[in-house]
Image 1: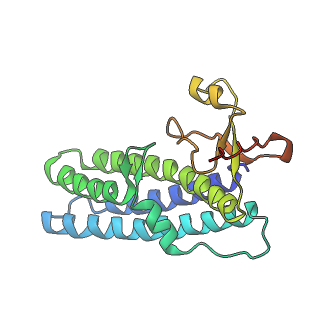
Image 2: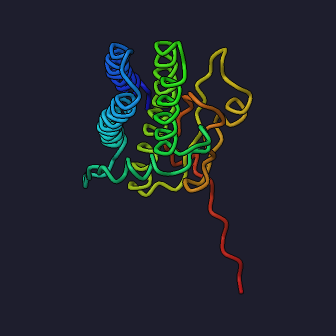
Length: 210
């Protein structure tokens, strides 16, 4: 599993974000009532784009990693559940943070004399959050495929380069039960979870005799 398609989805989302935040900047002289309306519209549009993109990403990754012939599509609810749950990596809930970003931008535009800079900052913040969650969607779709294939174990494979953290280095090659895999230790972690070969699988401990 690699993140090539994930990066394409991130690039697409970034393009859509730039277009829509730039459109907002073109309305820089609007009044307070229009600020509320335009920013709320912006974040509704972004929400639709992001969720559709994440669903497409999830299904692509899921299909690429599923071995069973009985293929099923991941549904919108799968993505919604992910975006409405707490993420231990970002340390927030996507949908809640989405609302907070919208409210903060409204306040900033109304109060600031540098409205264009506030919009640029909001764009960077939203782009960063989408990048974090695109990685999470990718990882969770892989794990969903493994679970549906009834795998019991997965191996942590670190993305080793000069930026690899000590935690990821320490986990490299370790085998975990599929329901006990630790979360990424930091945002933008590109470590992978891979299937465990037959000879790598830990032996199950025999049940104690009564």
